[in-house]
Length: 146
Image 1 (cartoon, rainbow, N blue to C red):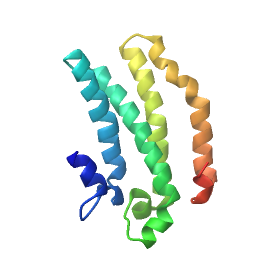
Image 2: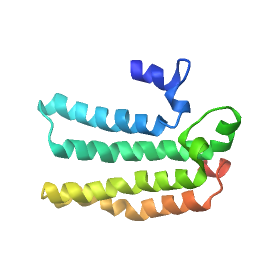
Image 3: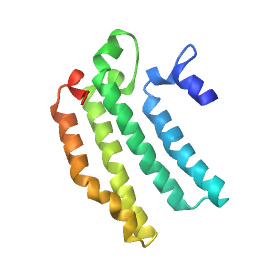
Image 4: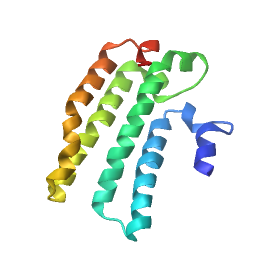
C-alpha cells in the first residue's frame, strides 16, 4: 500500500521520475511473482526469480511505451519520466531491452529446468518483432494509441 501511494501520490510521485519503469519491474515482476511463488511453495527456486524478471520486464515495457508516447507532454508539465529525461533514443533502447529480455529468460529457464515447454513463449517472437518495428517507426504521440 505504501509503495502504491509513493508511486502516484505524495510530493514527488515515483511515476513522474525516471524510476517508474524500475518500480513497475520490481512490484509487478519480482514482488508479485516471487511473493506468490513463496506463498504457494514455502520456498523460492531460482527459476521463480527468472520468471519474475520476465514478467516484470514486459510490465515495464508497457510503461516505456506509455511514457515514450507522452514524453513531450511530460517535459512541458514537469514530469521527469525516463523518456522525458533521457529522450526518444534512450527510450527506444530501454523498450528493446524490456521487450526482448523475457525471451532470453524463457530460453534460459527451458535449459535450466530441462523443459521444452518453458520455451513456449518463443512462439511470440514474431509479435514482439512487430511491436519493436511499430515502436521504432511510429512517431511518438497519438500514433501509439493502437
